[in-house]
Length: 74
Image (tube, rainbow, N blue to C red; front, side):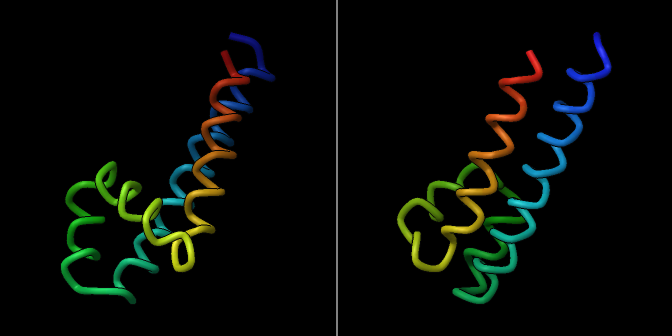
């Protein structure tokens, strides 16, 4: 694996982790049960974020950037 691919992969994973943290904060502010669901079932929480773009739009945009970086790594 080249250095550029490794860098893109690490940045992509870091951005995805940051999007999960932003989603965690947004969901805890919304409701206790969604916050707990974000901790226990992160993929389900992104479905919640798609329906609540007004509150969790930043998390979705960060996740899209993270997936693009991961796609470019391969």
